[in-house]
Image (cartoon, rainbow, N blue to C red):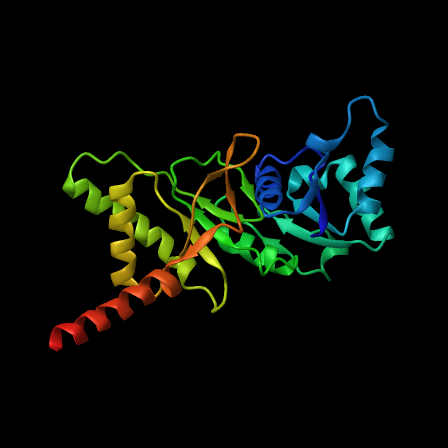
Length: 256
C-alpha cells in the first residue's frame, strides 16, 4: 500500500486534510501529516524533507490559507524537485496555482463528499479496497483496510411509524453507494439496533436489485472493536441466493 504525505502547512481550516488522514489510514495507507507526525524538538525542514522523499504520493490540500503557507510551499517544491506524484485537492474557490494547471485536481466539497473520496482512492490504486457505509451508530469505530465513506447515525426508535421512517431514510442514503460500477465491493456496517437492521434490509431488498455486503464490528486482540475489510458476508450472493433456492425446493416439494 502506498505511503502518502498530506500537505496543508498546518493551515487547513476546511478540515479536509484531517478527514482524508483518518479515512486513508483506515483504508490501510501509510499517511504522514506534519500536524500529527512531526516529532517535537526535531528540525522541521529535515523532517519535512525526509517525509516527502520517502513517500509515494503527495496530496496538496489547496485553499487560500495553504497557498500562503511557507511550510506547504516548501513541501510542494521539494516534491516537484523529487518528481513525486502530486495531486491537488481543491477545497474552495481558490484558484489552482499556475504550476499545477497541468495536473488533474480533485475537487472536494467538504468532509462528506464521498464521491470525490471514492474517485481519489481509485486514482491512488485502491480500487480493490472495500467501501462501507457505517450505520452502526458508533462513528468512532476504527477501520482496518476499509474505506469508510460515510458515518450515518441511527436515531432512537420509539414506535412502528418511526421504525419504518428511519429504515426508509437510511435505505435512501445507502442506495447511491449500491449503484456504482459493477464489481465495486460496497457494503454497510449494520445498525446496532436489530429491528432497524431488519427493516433496512427489507427496504433495500425491495428497492434495488442488489444487496450490500454486510460488515460487522469485531473485537481485536487489544480489546477494541473495529471494522475490518476481511470480515464480511455477501448478502446478495450467499443469503439471498440461498433463500431463492430454498423457496424453489419448498415449492417443488409441496407440489408433489
